[in-house]
Image (cartoon, rainbow, N blue to C red; front, top):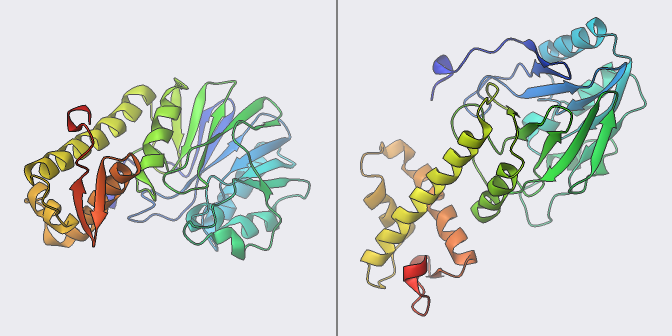
Length: 296
């Protein structure tokens, strides 16, 4: 997917009576049109979801314009969906242009996860918990811990409008990445149960058909897992390296993309290992003999 084929997004868009989207002015191959940040509520104080990247003056101008045109005096809460730099990187810049009196929130990151950008932020950040509710005038956001993309990743459910802020768990276009596929798949099923009316992702346009979109994500991963298991079955318990699985499954994929394909296969193998279906020895993978393979 190239930037030229993406759905154009306005810099500032009112999506509902309680939601204004402010584009982060940081387009790129990983960020798509840019990071979507959201201003939530209908009073003089509101909630801000994510802060984009560091040192993006055009974004700060957009956010300042939204504050002024909507008679916003400040924010009750700033919520960071996860530690990646395009979500928390702009926090200190945003704090410099808004009135004091807010609380910054983020879910704690596991110690064994990737480096946490918030370690380099000189602003006090409070820890979120799963199921916690944060309120502002007109709006109630329920915190949903949805690990997988990162260990600290959260989504938010706006109770008054039955809408879901999905962060990077579900994108408006294309597919996302993940640290742990096992956790990611559990999170997708968790989000599906909310039966949201719309999804406001951290990248890309609004998702108007949440159930279909989440189901599509789940089915895509299940299909790839089934293909990997088929390859392992064909080995007749002869161990195989991930790169060999890639050759069998991605034979039409350009060589430049094969390393990413191998990482994808490895994520699936690690998930299957967590579930007790496969084992690894010296970098080679195999079905576990004493598992009833007809049930997997």
